[in-house]
Image (tube, rainbow, N blue to C red):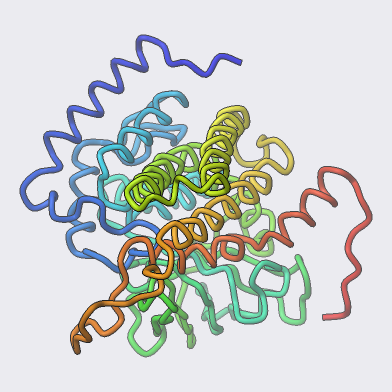
Length: 402
């Protein structure tokens, strides 16, 4: 296959690179490199201002199949170009990516025109931030176990339940929530996807989850009779499973390629430290560094190969394969980063400080945060089950009664 870019793509690259260089200045420069995985807690106000800057430039919603909402349109290859240039510029971690890359394509595929007209323009302007209300304490990778319920009250729904591992919940204005709207339903039946405003004091509570990195990227969200309008059910009442699975199909592709730019930067840092410390003289370390580099190239080719469809058109099992590849690769990189540093990798700050008693440098944060890579976003075990059952046609895993 030809993985090259055409003349129009390169012109688009020059435009994107120029815009980023011009706008990542002054106040926005302070947010540069902040807000990525493991540091989503950093610079929330600055990154929100950056979202609005992206919106003014029309850079939000490049992959939507409509340009009617104040966004630019771009071909698939141009979306890849933008994602790569954004990562190379070390632009701030996106706090609007859940709305842009998950909710918006879902509304375009399953939502009503009224829902698109209401919610897509604020996302395109960088004004409305979203979070995802899927996982629960008893329903993480197996979403069919969702217990959060939504009960009719007139034309609206009252949502009650708990969600967990919710990224950006403290910053979000809205949450799309998978909940049971049919009393007594089990498994995939009786679910609906509702759009719930987060600003409901006493009805929506967000509690940060402190991790072993000392940071709190994830949150618990408690809904206690939170109100969602009946007009804000996506795809119809009882169609939640179909819509939720379609939404997960959008969590792939272009964003994976941009993610790999960051991976390459982290790998380069580990290689540099191995050279500086002399660890590279160890033949085993050299072999592992080369293997990491080669596997990253394979991940890029695989991501390019699987681009093309969206939602239900995506190659069966492709998102699961991609998740298996990058999750374990990144985890091995974190392990290797500590091994390259040696015993010093386990040493904390030289002086205990009350304002930052749990300070970590980038290598230590990488090593600790990557322990979660094979769990969040669907554990490795679940991804293998998906491939086995839906791609290879193997018998379904035996499951006990709910």
